[in-house]
Image (cartoon, rainbow, N blue to C red; front, side):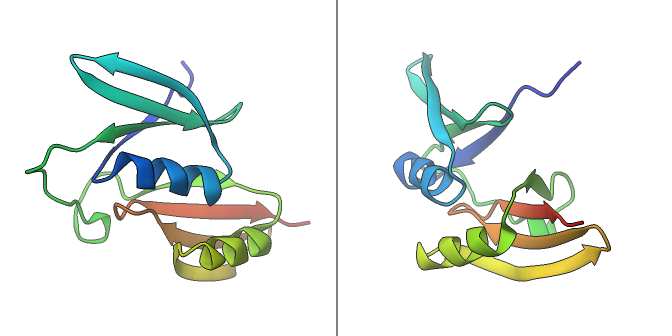
Length: 124
């Protein structure tokens, strides 16, 4: 078995797609229509995230106060640059890079729909 994709239901598809492209550097890799609804996949050679437009009456999840999926995590080469760039682009930076373990730096961002994203850089 191997990982396939992570699905996120969003309030505004275009805003979320723009966030994942501009802040995390992912590209649109596929669009598929199923039962009249468009699903957009953003990713790279190792990550795939499905962006699904929410229905008008859907409610916002709050991962910090609910059980279940809390966050997803990605590894980057330069965490400080990514966090600085994310902030310039208006992203919600929850935690500045800090040494969570001796071999890594960690930071947290929040996407436009409140999804928590852990950013990790391995250091030597």
